[in-house]
Image (cartoon, rainbow, N blue to C red; front, side, top):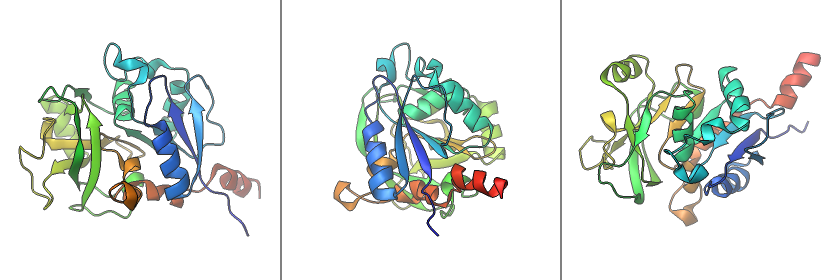
Length: 244
């Protein structure tokens, strides 16, 4: 019996420049049914997961992600996330998720005050949520970064809550997994590179897994995150099961 592929929406905002990267990675390398969804859409009917890609939505006017948070499609994204649907925010997508309060914290200017574009190492801190399935705490992934406002910030009280709730997904580390000031180049609080919401279905991270899914582009560690999409039950299958 043939089964349909999970249908994954890639949201495109004015100024997005990672939407086509994400689309190609998901369709060609991961093997899901990727669809481009315009920021003016108001429905995510038939969608099994959502990816908010990198870029400079609305030219980062006001601050990164601040205007995209009010795009028409975000009402549907927020409802999808609150219903337990898998949502991934990459780089600018992470910034949008914090602005929409789907994830805690904010992304500030890199402490170097420079744009960072290089490969980095991130250590897995939790592996008990959708996007981190198949990973183990302590695993180190190598992924590229490309951001000017990637310094993750929360106050001390929120940081304590994130740690207590096991919401820190990734930290910037050296290749051997050790924490150093040099590895945390953008100056993120707690060297945090990615966080989840309390239920784990929403993940935001600054490094780009979609740019590390083919050996020709420098590695395949991104598949260890995005590959979890292949385990999704599709909306069509779920509907058919309920009807039977």
